[in-house]
Image 1 (cartoon, rainbow, N blue to C red):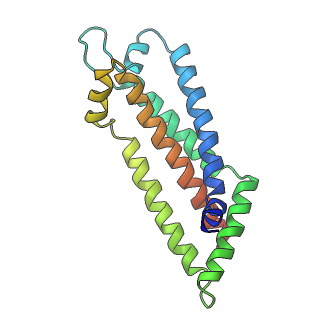
Image 2 (tube, one colour):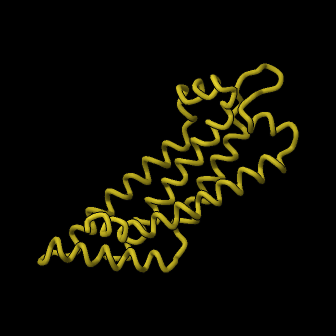
Image 3 (tube, rainbow, N blue to C red):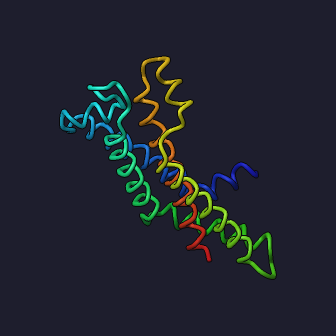
Length: 168
């Protein structure tokens, strides 16, 4: 029963995460196929001259992922409406005299998560992740994957926060 309740409360986030995953795949494919030759090595995380990692292509992908995640989180859908109804119902069960207090607390937690994830995605990937990728000669995939995964989390928490805001 509790798992079902959690799935109902996170329905909007799960839908947004799925849409963001599709967006990440499409943006990555588009940038890798359409990038100019001088940007492509930077996108892959390798500078052809010095062999060091360049961040221009990765920065382009990071911002594209971030903007699509914000767009997905702000998109209205049936999942936002359904999730907000379930959040409102759960909040009323928890606090009968102050029904919106639990929703406000939940919204604050979600907003802190979104802000933290945005700050995390604007930083370069952890060096441990890059070095682990280099062991398999796939460091560029780990770099791109880091930004993509964080943007999926941003879409999840952002859409759930939007539903909680609508529940107020």
